[in-house]
Image 1 (tube, rainbow, N blue to C red):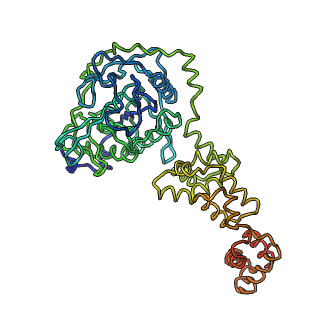
Image 2: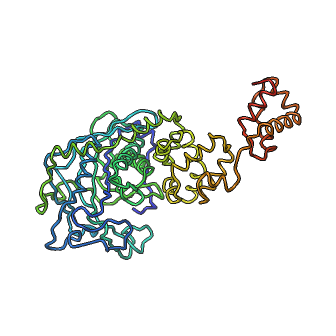
Image 3: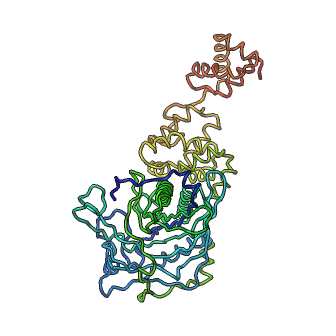
Length: 508
């Protein structure tokens, strides 16, 4: 079936009325090590094809692997962060299969003796509930190479005229995190899948073990799904949708497969246990190959690698390096900064939490930090196709500049409009906030006599508005403040002008 073909689908509500979904999520994470898992080849993303290879990762005769110690350390830290038990003794195995992107015709992985097992991860759903996902295992393995199919319309092997293989990725350290069957999610199954992958991504990023860039393939999710008759408690036949590489696609793939399975089962058909390809453009899956079982891979212990037996004191040392769980940190900072749920959501969506925390630590207020980072700098970063931290770092702008800008406002040197001009100058590379303010002549007029003259003139020119304020309609004062600021050429203190107007009109 091609990517343009569609299969019969059952309505989502009809699926839920007749069947119970079960999920299984397998997330592959490329570790951010400098070298590969079993050799000294570099792991730089985007290098020229087949320039980061050697006899070991190409599987040439006589080449012997050596385990990457940082890879093992990262695997243990991931296991601990997922509340797993760390094995006192584990070993690698050969997973045998033939595919052009696997140069050795086997993958060095772990099978029945993984480094970490039996954990869980609690995920927050949008409805405010917490769903616990049980972790079966987290094991070490190596990545495969990358095939490029040329000449076809879809980029897949069907219809291609020829294929190319880049082995740069072959041998890069991977951690595969496998959940136990996720049952009981019901209609929330797509949301649970997305929330789990999002929570896992945040956790791995906080650990510093991977850049977790799903768009570059350094974090990929295989979505296993099955349906069983409502209330039966028996798991159905599963399909595995491979290499889903965005949070949105994880959610969509689960929903699509639920509707596809439902249509097949309702028509009296049976589900083929197979791998499926996800198509981002059309939002559908298509058949890949029949899914192999473990025995088909003929696992056996890797004879060229010694077992991994981490000392307990080393494991506890690594446990002490774990950061605060991201979800817990978010809740703590939201409470400390008095952000509303909407404000916090916007901060998180823009990737600003680290910058804001750094700014507050440097002496800024939470309100000012959120205001300045989420305003003009965010607009410019979006227009440039970057996230705010990367864009700001490229400009050499950081928390110190925001704190300095806030100080200019709180000291009475600048009003809000002036501060915006100064900030734009900083982003344009004109210097620090103070330097920009000096160069542009930005300075509040502190002459109380000039302010009083402007206020009296504006009140006299607007008797109807003044009368409304005298009658208690204080909200009308905004119109007069604007005119006062105009009279003072933007250099007046709006707060002082407001207080003086209300005082003059008997509303102080």
